[in-house]
Amino acid sequence: MKVNESVLVVDDDLDFLKIISRILGSKGYEVGTAPSAGEAISRLKERFYNAAILDISLPDANGTELLSRIIEIHPDIIAIMLTGHSSVQNAVESLNRGAFAYLEKPLDPENLLSVISRGLEKQLLVIENRDLVEELERHNRITNTLLNVSQAVSQSLDLQKIIDSALDRVAQSTGLEANFVYLNENDHLLLKSHHGLSKRIVQAMPKEVGKDSGVIGRIFGEAKPEIIEELTKEAEANLVFLGDGGYHSFAGVPLTILGESIGILGVATSFAHYFSANNIELLTGIGREIAIAVRNAQLYEEASSARALKELDSMRTEFLANVSHELRTPLAVIKGSANSLLQPDVIFDEQTRRDFLSSIDKDADTLTRLVDDLLMMSRLEAEALEVKRKPHKLAEVINSIKDRLDNLTAKHHLRIDIPDTAPPVAIDDGRIGEVLTNLVENAVKFSEDNTTITIEAHPNGKEVVLSVSDEGIGIPEELHHKIFGRFFQGDGRKTGRRKGTGLGLAICRGIVEAHGGRIWVESEPARGTKFSFSLPVH
Image (cartoon, rainbow, N blue to C red; front, side, top):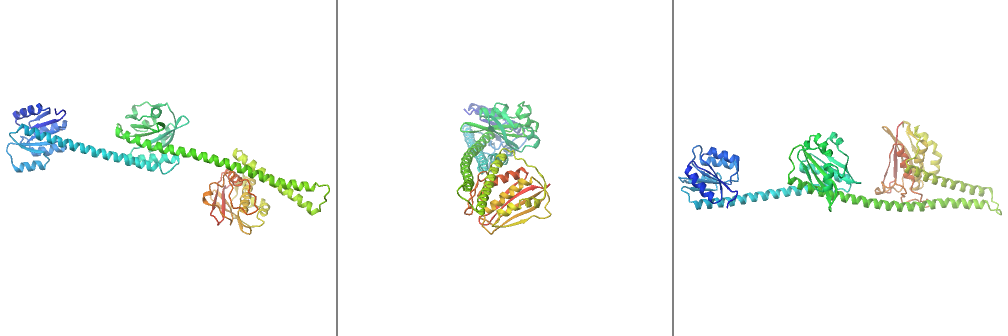
C-alpha cells in the first residue's frame, strides 16, 4: 500500500478522472482531481502532492504552462504529462520544463503505475539526499561553532577571561543577541559574565541565585535544558529582567562535566518561538566546552594556590632563618664588646673603649631597624599603618635624611635631582623618608663601589614620580612581579653584605600604597635598576 503518497490528476475529461481515481485508489494512493488548471493550482497551494498527472490540453491553460507553475509551488513534485496527440515538440518541451515522464492516451494502467512508482522512488532519493546534505551542513555548522568556542576558551587559564571569551564567541557564531553565565560557588549561583545586555538590564539581573530558585536554579539542579518561548507570560522571578528588557524567548542549558553541574548558560532573543531542538543541541555542546574550560581553570587556580602556599611557607622558613641570623650577628658583636669592656683585669686605652662602644651603638641601631621592619610589616598586613599626610616639598624631605643617605652611599656617588618647580606632595614625610632610605640601601647592596646612585623627581599632572636608580647588576624581567612580595630576596649582593630579611621592598610598597600611590621597577640584567613610585600632589 502506498500509504501517505498522494497523486493529483488534472484533466477536463470527468470520466477519465473517475477511471484514473479508481485505478490509483485501488493501489493505495490518495487521489485528488481537478478539471482545470485554476483548480489544480488552488489545490496545490493548500497541500503537497507527491505526483501530478497533467493533461497537456486544458480549457483554461496549456498543460506545459501549468507544469511550470506547479514546479514553482512544489519543486519536488513528480509531474507526468498526458496527451491524446503525441508530438516530439510537446514531449521535449515538457521534459525541459521539469516533467518526469510524457505518456500518450489511451493509457496502459500498468505502465502508468510503473512510471509513478519509478518517479516516487526518484523523489524519495532526492529528498533523502537533500536531507543528508542539510544534516551534514548542520553538523558542520555545529562543529565549526564548537571549534570557535573551544579555541576561544583554550587561549587562557584565567577563569574570567575564559567566560568572557566564550560568550563573545557564542554571540559571533550563533547570532544570539544576549547570553550570560552563572557558576556555582559556595552553594549559590553567582553571575560571572554577560554579553549583549544593556546596562539597565544588567543592573536588574540577580547577581546571586539560590540553587533551588526559579528557572536558573532548576536548570542547574536538574541538569536539563529548559526553553521558555514567551517570557512576558512567565512569572519566574529570576528571569523578569529579560521580559522587562524586551526579550521574548529564553533557553538555558546546564554546564556539566563528569555528571556534575557547575553552572548554567542562558541565552535570549527578541524573537518568540526561536529555539528548536537543533538550537538546544548546539547550546548543550557549547555548554560542555565552557564547562571543561572552567573546570580546567578552577583546577589550575587550585594548583597555583597550593604552589603559592608551598612557596610562601618555604619563603617564611627562609625568612625566619634570616631573621635569626640578622639578630644573632649584632647581638654577638654587642655581647662580645660588652664582655670585653666588663673584664676587671684588662684596662683598655680610650680609643679601644670608643671602638667597642661604637660597635655596640651601631649594632644596637641594626637591631632597632630590624625590629622596626618587623613591626612595620605587621602593621601593613593588619592594614593598621598610620599615615599622617601633610604638604611637604620633596627637597625638604630628602634634606631631612641626607646624613643617613650620605652614610649609606659613602662608597658611591649620590646624585640628587629635584627640580625647584616640583609641587608639594601630600605625604607623611617620615614614612616617605623610610621608602627612600630602603631604596637607596637596596641600590648600594646591588651595585659596585664608585658607581652612581641617583634620586630624581618628575612632576606628572596630579602626581609626582620619585625614582632611585643605580648602575648595578639589574633584575631579570621574570622577577619584576615578585620583588615587592614579603620575604623575597634577590641574588647577586656584593661580597660581605648581609642577606637581610626580604621585607624592605614589601614595606616600601605598603607605605606608598597607603599614600594612594604606586611603585614599580624598570631593570635589565647588567644595565642597572630604577625603582619609581608616585605620590599625589597636594
